[in-house]
Image (cartoon, rainbow, N blue to C red; front, top):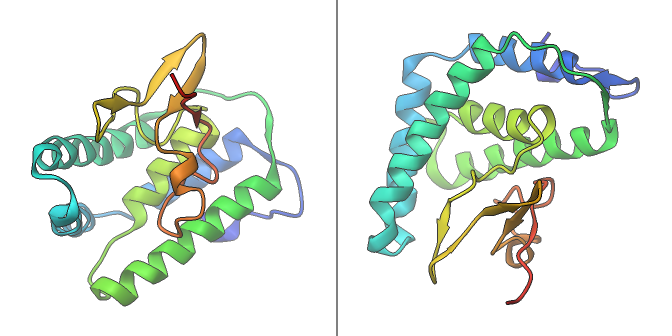
Length: 175
């Protein structure tokens, strides 16, 4: 069962979503990762040069690790998902894919990003950006007492290309 085949009108377990993500991951090819990484490098031209290399390395490794983790995840997860939140997240990601294809052309693979975003958020219950992800100003995503904090969440809530709307991280409080 793929993401498009999930029935959002009924309860969806974490295991149902994991199965769908595994099916999506099984449809990926090395070319998808090459396209994703190529796009990533192109999109980094607007990022301060100090962060470019670190971001590219972090995201490239993250996509590959996430892909491997999804495919090899043999855990059984307890609990049902909030179908409305999951549906909104999938629709947001599908909309982002369309925006990206309009902007950068059809030769773009968005699936690794989609799989990783949904897996970390809804299965692992972790933020989309891993703990330690750097942001300008020396700020980083961090965890304290099992709560994740992001320094840029509030600034990106209305960004159509951000996943902050469904990421579980909280806005970093002002220090």
